[in-house]
Length: 525
Image 1 (cartoon, helix red, strand yellow):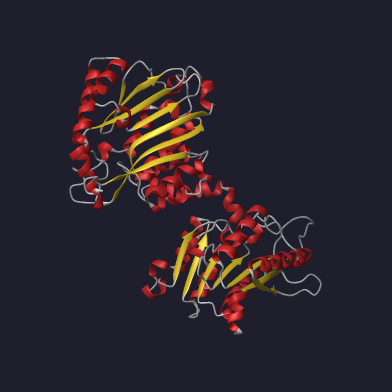
Image 2: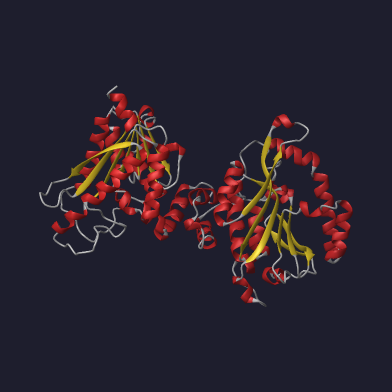
């Protein structure tokens, strides 16, 4: 980052300062947009590229944008922010196209004197940094101050426009992105944005220095202005992975309010929450807890291990779940598996059993719920484990319904009471994720036996054992599904009961043990 700051200072500062001087002169002289733009175009015909944030629309009539932003298109307006000013003006206004520009004028002295947290990348970062030249949390603060009415869904003169989806193009001249273009796309593409991103070199004069973390970004989407501003307000500092002010409980509330219509279903919500809250674990866990309660995805994907929800039908006092875990462990031992992944690991009960066996050299636990993984860390006491033991275990957040390269190369995989939480499309995606892409040597799947439900004292026809179950299969249904799966992906499969066996309806749970055919062939070669 420091080299790029040097590049900015050496090659861009004079240009930017001259632009600021001209703009301030226009403001001081109360000149209109046209005269101001004429003066600044004298400096550079491509002035619009210098704007830190521009929002354009071709919605007819396009000048409705000025009503939504509650900013007069014929004036240059300014608002105070904590370390400078934000200037708002319209480089282009017509019925066909309207562009609003938000330009930050950061006071370097005010930046040093500010009471917010100081950077720690290097000793003089407080004095030499990129903040005056990039879109950062200062930009989010400026959006909240300059476009407050639009961000909160208010339009004094044309309230009906608030809920109208319009085509927008957003340009961010210099956006720092920790993690590169992949992170940028993971944040905006799930929200429907088309992205054109150009990554800047540290210095074109010295190409061997490589690329910086700075991008010129163009985003296009059709949505309401309030949605657009809420996305920018949250995701700009998330891209930067930094904030210029202290983060506290108030920031959790801001995040939940600004992200209320989209954050809970965003596939990168974990990263968004943690970065927005400056990686403060307690605040992030609190925000995620609220999101996860509302999120149907967790209810669909998460296993009974993690949720332990209230059930409609009470299972016998026998610790059937412990029997499921022991059965899965024993099958892995019989298979000779050394590297094992527990899919839908929940609070880590199976992982704890596996770590007690020396045969298992490495155990990976994956769950969709960050909250469950935090519980697993505490119950497994990872922070107090010896270094040698810690090297045997890893917990990761992920979805079972997406291809994940981290799951490749394992001898065995378990899905204990997981599949019944998935609806049909997600179940099909899980099949491919596990059997086509990950391809573990052995796969162990357990699921309730629906036939046994009649043995429960509070049995009611048509009711499932758990509110979150999407289905419960009979032994015949489970065997048909498993056999088709084995044929399709070149596995052998055997079936075993789990729990006390009833001669008429079978056991409480049922288990399928899949063995990859090429591994079986090697054993008998």
